[in-house]
Image (cartoon, rainbow, N blue to C red; front, side, top):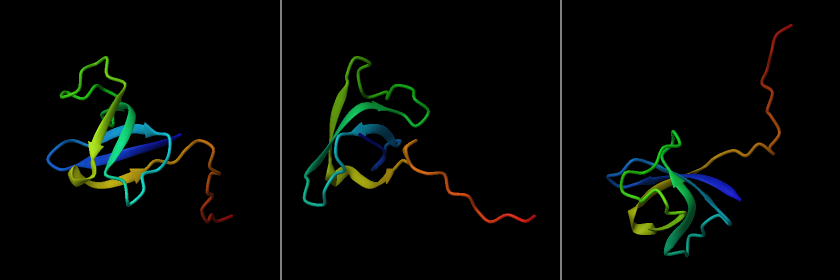
Length: 79
């Protein structure tokens, strides 16, 4: 499961989960648990909705959020 931040034309970004990352050949993105970045409900989606389909032509770009499973990167430090 991957968490995405999807930037939609003329709308606030949508944070949601997807089973698989979308491919360039896909026509849409099927998202689970759609919400705003702060976790609140989207004003244009009913609260009981668990999944939405966003057509690619409305998407500006997609951010893939880091998961907790990835290693923490330690930057340079001085002694």
